[in-house]
Amino acid sequence: GWTTGGIVASTSGLPLTVPLTIRRFSDDKPFLPGAYALGDILMKEGYQQEYLIGSDALFGGRKFYFDTHGNYHIFDLKEAYNEHKLPEDYHVFWGYEDEKLFTFAKHYKDQYPEQLSNIIRGNSIKIGEFIDWLKKQPFYNDTTIVIMGDHTSMAAEYIHKTYDSDYERTVMNVIINSQKKTAFNHQRLFTAFDLYPTI
Image (cartoon, rainbow, N blue to C red; front, side, top):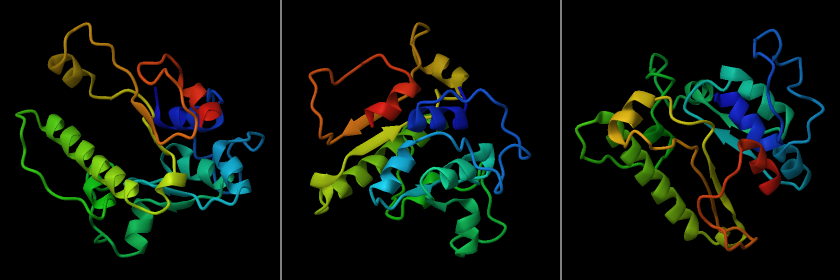
């Protein structure tokens, strides 16, 4: 139900039940040092890992988690300022818009009266373009794409207005070009903790 809990669960298989405070998770204190997370596995196998996000990675201790488990290169709001990709006084909601995160992003005309619907549509198009680009790359055959949500939408009121009252909200997770094949490709029941061993 919260960002860091979802990220830790889906990449380490561990339930994060401790409160996150700056005093508990900081640069000089490893984040769950005993855990063996997905980032640790990929680092051991020689992968270059990056975590790109349009907000401050310090939020929720995410920076410390990805520093501890995988030595990720983190490109967040602070890094965007440091690299002069944004004016120093630029800030929108959490940080900056997703469209700035995708360098090839295009602008699309609004199609829905509800602004959140247009935002969802715009992001879906950008993600689709990114996946299409990946599919054309020479490394695609050796690439598995994992799209993971961290928790259900915080816009509960919008969801209830837009969909039937009995609509069950879930977290979207998609695996594309998996090296493992299964006949069960849709609507499988699982938790965030299952993503770590699956990946």
